[in-house]
Image 1 (cartoon, rainbow, N blue to C red):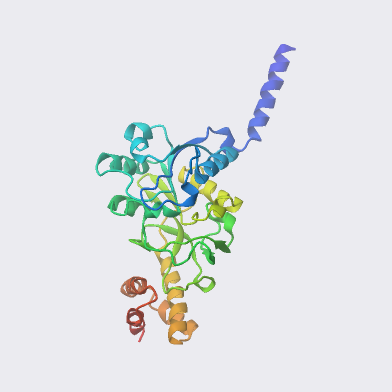
Image 2 (cartoon, rainbow, N blue to C red):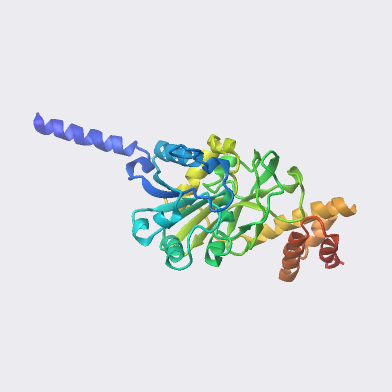
Length: 329
């Protein structure tokens, strides 16, 4: 009887294991959460005398609920981002501003941590961090250059890859109320943009592509960034929670999804945004303008001119807009 009992218990244990979600079977990954503000401090990372801020609380809750990760919080990068301390972590999260670390080994340790095969997740102002540290800027691929789309506005977004696990929960088109950044030092050839502002459903409308979420490989590591997260209400949104959880899973290599750059898609988004803006400002036929521009989409110099000049214009200098149109004559 004892032998039979042992066999039945072993079989039962095997069945329970088969019916357990994969992320629960494995030990949760350990994430270092940095919410330090060496520049502007956003409300979601303001502890306001409490032990944790909103971002830290939410990440701890969704990490535990999903079984994917646990968190260790820090608002002191100099103390927490050291070679010795980083050995215990599988990934890192930034909702940060400013120059967090001195030059030299501390910054090198951060870059080498990601390049060694670890995960990096950045939200919102992670792109307003280390603006004078080229290696970080190249890693995250952009620096904050203003937010014409303010916290009180609801704008439209186009999901370019709704099958990608990190954005599948958002649908092909969606509306969202949040502050949206635009960027300097953005290189379309190194990242895969997953969703962008839909200028036709956003205000203000600008003549350039504004990426909002992207992924990339960085050495052996993976980087996931989403510009969403300024508003406290975003951090209480269940769809955003799913977006973050899947971002963590992807960066930690628990799920797969492509990270190869998609500059051609980004070029098409640049064309659409420019055509919308120029047709309204100069009373042109938008569809005809799109056709003319798409005919030159394989011309690298034209696309470069389009990106650079429309970006520099910021909707103010029509001479730069005209420089792009002159190339279509």
